[in-house]
Image (cartoon, rainbow, N blue to C red):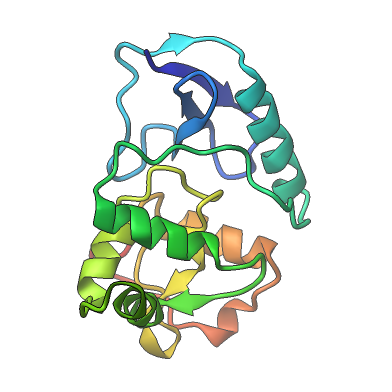
Length: 177
């Protein structure tokens, strides 16, 4: 059974949360996010993990490091995507990394080469946005290469964490928007 709840207090749009009952399994921006989780079959309830997630998000959107993340579950993602998510969880508040740096970390972990493009696919399918900070992953040379929730939201999240957008190359056309 999948349980769900809305987080309404986001400055960048409604957020839909899902849980297996004890752990967070999904966090999406309303219906405007790439790879959006459909609502069908989810039971809208309140759970302790949703309370923890709302508190985490409240702190985050207040411009502060929320610290330890709520309990999460990545059982529904492939082993490769799980490793990508684990690497993203190592990116601290107010820090950035690149797809290439994650690829190097995965190669070191597994002994197998991983391409930045493959990492990009894993980052793009992150089921728990913000908490697993895919917005902190950028392209080589400071390129903001895209965000499943839209470039406007990626920029807002980076600004919230204190980044100066003048330091980045922001796309004006293409699929990254």
